[in-house]
Image (cartoon, rainbow, N blue to C red; front, side):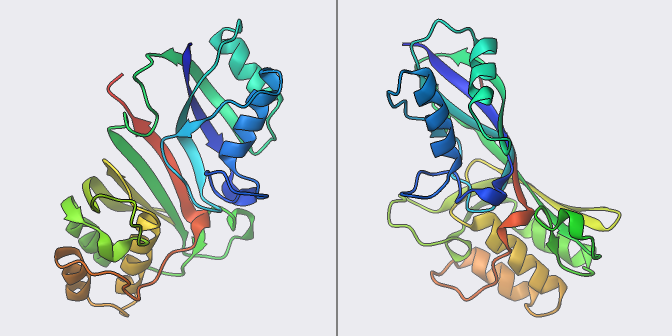
Length: 244
């Protein structure tokens, strides 16, 4: 049976995240509903590269599914989009090997978090209004997490995980006018991890947490830390890399 890999964009504002939930609108559920229409009402399970939270957006989410169809990839992409709401779109569709898995084959994931330092209501669903920030302090904190670390202090507890170590390849804040963007990439990310990191770094910038406290939480991780979590609307999954 052919395996299809799709790349997606979605506005997370109207979704309760990626993963299926009872009686809640999710991105995975929307795609599976669209596929069910194309598959004579038979369920096709869709697997995503990352389980984005409620309100989190994506420009480059990746998913896969198995589907026996006479449609080529272009026609399948158009058929899916024809049955999807306007806040989610399939941008690309290709056939991949049966061994490909959107989540487990991923080598590197990229996120961006958008903060706004002035008031501009038109992008309130896509930025966090933080007020002024100290870019130097933010980048000092961002550099601390590069490398292989245990991010227990900056994640929601989950007993399903074998470990909580992640390799962070890039971590940097960049200013673009009144918007300050945090860019981070890694081999994996834990539940709420980017939002906890962003929230804590902003608290360092505001002088409410000292840099040494942040380094201590990285170097000596502990569970159930009382730290600030950034709101979801500024976070975007921008890209997922594979070796094929």
